[in-house]
Length: 468
Image 1: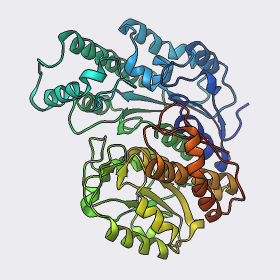
Image 2 (image 1 turned 90 degrees about the vertical axis):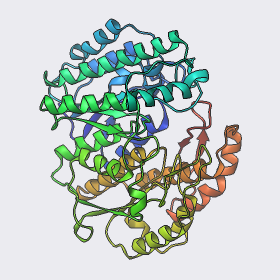
Image 3 (image 1 turned 60 degrees about the vertical axis):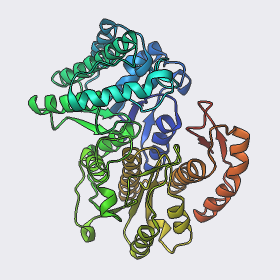
Image 4 (image 1 turned 90 degrees about the horizontal axis):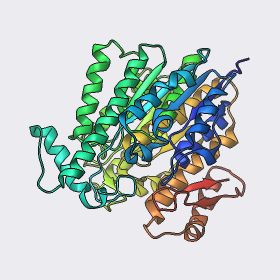
């Protein structure tokens, strides 16, 4: 028997944004979210237990929808998709096997698969070993190949370049196989995500090719290429809810910088404006004029290219932009969402501090997000805000759970990422330095003495886990 609002999710891996954030949204929205046991999911060094995942999928019952990370199903996780040593035959066999694993057509299936990224740095933490020496050179080779055609490289050893090309070709072939499975009614909707992209590169060539195939095969209503990756399960979760819901909110978009919205988003190939539009269109919700929408999305930008907290890059001065935004927010009486895009990899500290000293209606703040990339922030903020709006209409909204979700974003995106994070930070230091932020935001959100604990789940500074 199918239980209403029951959705299963196979995440990318065991990171907090993959595993805990979807659960937080489900908890305040009345969604019965079914997840695999976290201990069987992949991390930075180990892949997911593929036999466990297969059994978990086969045993699913009583659900409306399944959202599945195809990278996790085939490779054992997002990181493992970049590091594996499987043959093409092994990968294609694994992909084909999904039809035997997901055999219950009584629920709808939403799939997502990444187009492998090409990071512009020398580090093998999430890539193959040779990336620590040749990462930047491979990025440059890829960029030139896109701009002027096939390139050789005297700076990259032939065996390394051969291996890299072969790896990309295998993953690309798997993505094309997913596209074929649309015609076998395997997916309700399929997203190919451009993971940490740029304006030029072989990954962009692959994305453009898949876009053309989607159009040529008349699949535009059920498949899409989109920037981002980590936010995609949240977007698909929301899309599944919207499909079943009689309530569908409209949104309007307010950018506080015309120059800023037309800049290319960091780690993406699109402008900030197009990236935001793409996330909204993927959900299938209507964009209305500012005065007519159910929810207002306020998008904070600098006039320049985004800053980046990781690489200590500052954007142009944002004081005037913040002043304009705060005045708008203080007059707003409808539900609103704040998408904080002045920086990549964390919040704009001046914006958050201005919000803390403002007279905005905090009970109308339906979502805040300012983490990683433009697409990551936008997709997660929309998912949070839309699900709150729907759950309120259905009278199943859990306010206490929502406040914890909102607290998590301010503690992670602002306090941790933008204020205290550094490469050598320890869990002990995190827990000590985060205490005043916990107290301040808990008081603001009227959360009574929450027991908050912080961990570094992948034993590195990049992500923090916030537990209650």
